Length: 172
Image 1 (tube, rainbow, N blue to C red):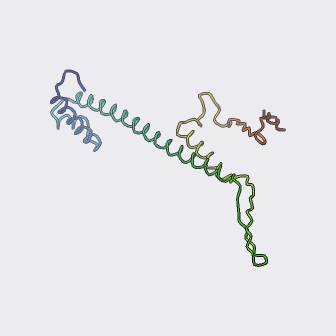
Image 2: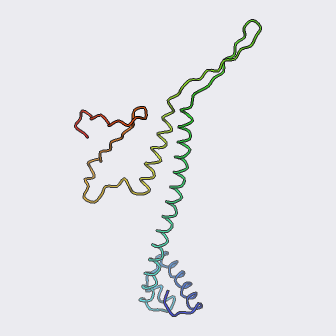
Image 3: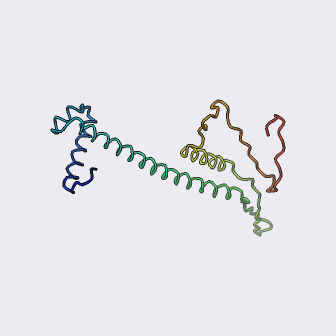
């Protein structure tokens, strides 16, 4: 808003700009809007520049807020997936009951589990979505879009740190 305007003038200017924006959205030409408000076309042109700047600023803020909310949701889904993964690795326990000679015996059987890999799929999907929202999957300037980046995933065998074995395809 222009400097040196008192609050009443600023309010009137804001109100006019809101009406100018509505007419502009409905397809009125700058000259038509200027005649309706009894101001010059240059004034309407200036108002529309200010309006466009405000719309752009608002859209950036709205997108940033939306991205932040989506990232928080993704974080929660990933957190729950990791909880599910750890729980799926816990020993499965079953009770086996037997009746012998009028007596009742119960046996607890524990079976180790490797974990449900579907939870890791959810984690990977969360990471992918997070990267998409942060534009981390886009090619860098000068990078060939047709050549995929090479990604080496290293998973330690039985939690021991070992160097990954070289693959036979020449990739390092």
